Amino acid sequence: MKFIRTLSLLAGLTLILAGCNQESDQAPAPVKANTNPLLAYVPADSAYVFAALEPIPKEITDAYIARFQPALEIISTQVAQFQSAYASGNYQGNDMATLAAAVLDELGGSLSADGFAKLGISLQSPQVFYAMGVFPVMRLGLNDTQALRDAITRVESKMGFEMPAREFNGTAYWRVTEAGMPLGLYIAIVDGQLVLSAFPVAAEASLLAAFLGQEMPAQSMASSNALAIMNSSKGYTDYGSGFIDLQKLANELLNPDSATRAYLGPGTDPHFPSLDAVCTAEVKSILKKAPRMTVGTTALTTNEIAVRYELEIEKGLAGSLARLVSDVPVAADGDHLLSGSLAVNVGRLRSFILDKASAIVATPYQCEALQKLNQGATDLVAQLNTPMPPFVNNLMGARIQIDDFNPTATIPEGTGLVALHVDKPEMFVGLASMMIPGFDQLDLANQTEPVRIPADMLPIQGVEVFALLGDSAIGAAIGPQQVKELGAFMAAKAQQNGTFFSVSYDLARQAEIQADMSQKWSQKWNNDADGQASSVNALSEALRKSYISMLGRSRLDMRFTGDGLVIDSRTTFR
Image (cartoon, rainbow, N blue to C red):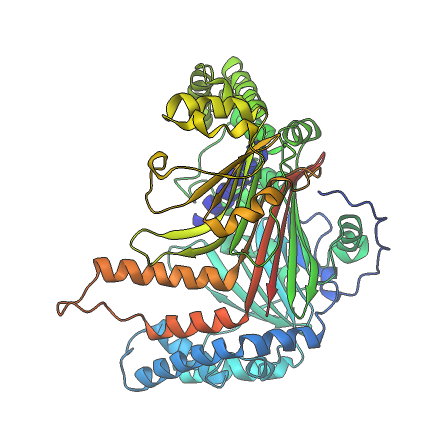
């Protein structure tokens, strides 16, 4: 089934990340008592869970609702057009359109906090998303359960279709299934909650009691207080955090005697391989290298959202990955369009990949499903054993800062700074002198100020480039107005926190550039018969302007620590 392939793909992608924190000096925050009552329904050994331990303050949710209101109003206009078309009979016979029209009518024709409040749903309500076995469950606290029940009744009436309620041990629920599909969508309103899940119909006898809250776990996430303890140790806030345990998922999906495999049945998905004991052991050995990923908010204010992802990696592998990072400075924040940095010791990276690939070649996987990994490792060993120019192993990383970019020019124009960080910069200068006639006459090694590169040495005409040689980098300024900044750019303080990739960029300006580029290519390739460019979709254009008015900057930092991979994402708003 598709969801099994999706889970397998997610696990594979996670391992790729592992193979390819800034650690806090502060003491862990005190562990708070659990205040989310819905965690009592979550087994302590769940394979994945995400929940907020504290409701997001109303002033914060109000600020974001107000900020997104212009966009919501634009969407509401489109909703009104759909409702008008539906009333005119344009969607006759379309069950999904009928359902959408009925739900939108209940929401008052718009997406808003007030509309959801009429359904008994509040943005401050407790909620939790977790695994029941491997199957997802979402619980959402309700302010008014009867309001939601009445709304469902009205939706059914407007659709002209009644979804018959089922009953299990005296508790009502709904099940939505399609012929030939083993999975069902389960919905219930119980104990002041809206509960949703998807699991095999064949598993009802085993899972319904837990889904409906009739059977509570002996040990729960509430009693263990696992999320609060994790938040304290990792610096997450209580406004949202969780984890996914890849090994537990693997056990349920790979073990032939697991409950999940029993529920799914032997012929559920022809694309799901039949794994023997050897295959199961080898796949688990791969997953063991990166057994768990955690996620949590690290900041949430009216103008900022920050989230951290941490992939926990086996200690030996994590240490090897951390040693690949060079001391190249991280991307700088500022008012520029974009700043980026890559800090990887290419020589060490080559040796690391060669070592791992050689280990697979020496002891190849026996599982048929992993034969492509064996072939890939063989190809890598052959490629990496090919002699490389000495300067390649001297590469330590690169940085870029773009201050302006005009994609609508005949040849896209931009201004900014670039630095190539190397172990021996003079080696690169010598190479350039051999390959580019006249380059040696620039005498970069003896210059203290940026030197203009003659136009006849550049592949693109009309661009002014100034170069400067430093102790550990070769820098270039694109555009004369950037020359005065090049020295300071190259002298930026080296980082020592394991960050191997970082980027900071202006979200609003990025959206503008994307729109300009889209319009440019649309005019070039999609002209109407009269020669006039096709008009931009009015809704998309209005939404773009609304987003630009609210967006600030975004920053992403990826680093290796002795414990694994840490990804910090931060977004600011105007």
